[in-house]
Amino acid sequence: MRLRNIPGSREVIGESKYVIHEMEEAKGKWSEIFQNDHPIYIEVGMGKGRFITQLALENPDKNFIGIEKYSSVLLRALEKREQLPELMNLYFLRMDAEDLEKIFAPGEVSGIYLNFSDPWPKDRHAKRRLPSKEFLARYDKILAREGKVEFKTDNIDLFRFALEQVQEAGWKLEAHTYDLHHEPEMVKGNIMTEYEERFSSQGNPICKMIISR
Image 1 (cartoon, rainbow, N blue to C red):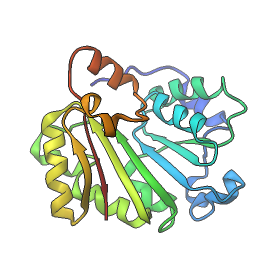
Image 2 (image 1 turned 60 degrees about the horizontal axis):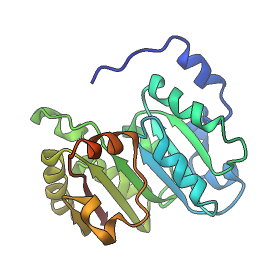
Image 3 (image 1 turned 30 degrees about the vertical axis):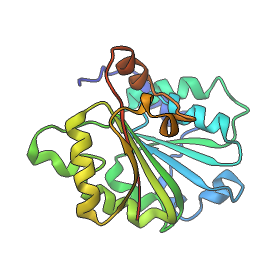
Image 4 (image 1 turned 90 degrees about the vertical axis):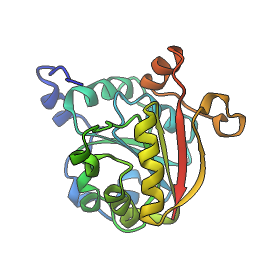
């Protein structure tokens, strides 16, 4: 998918108080940034931010960080965030997910969300896929002992790949479904992303898995 560049998006992001700019200095100090000891949850590849923003609204006793590497997409999330100045438990990062270990200390993250990630369909790009064993190794280093990773996608091939990677990486498959919206237990409390709403309205089933170590 080719993303349209929005002139001035980097400048807007660079000036936003909702984006943490000195990221590496935040490692191990996220509780100080949020000014509380609430658990921290991150969404890697948050897109336009609907999911993580709604989570933050519904869970004031938890802290959330949305991660996005594309400035033009992050700008849309910021537009939502700026309409909610009272929301104190949500920040954003513009960064590549490969650098997670530089930003979070071991065990500093209580949960990770992956929603409709880029499938990187070519085999030679498999290690770039966010549910790959390479990324699971990164998550393992920052995730709390009881932490979980939740992954949603409409891409069946990517989902099957993700399930294989769970076993290869030595993780535990807590739950999974190939049709989330028709799985009563797993769909409880489900927050739809913009992609999910569009794909499901077209009749595409949504896959989801929850994994732990």
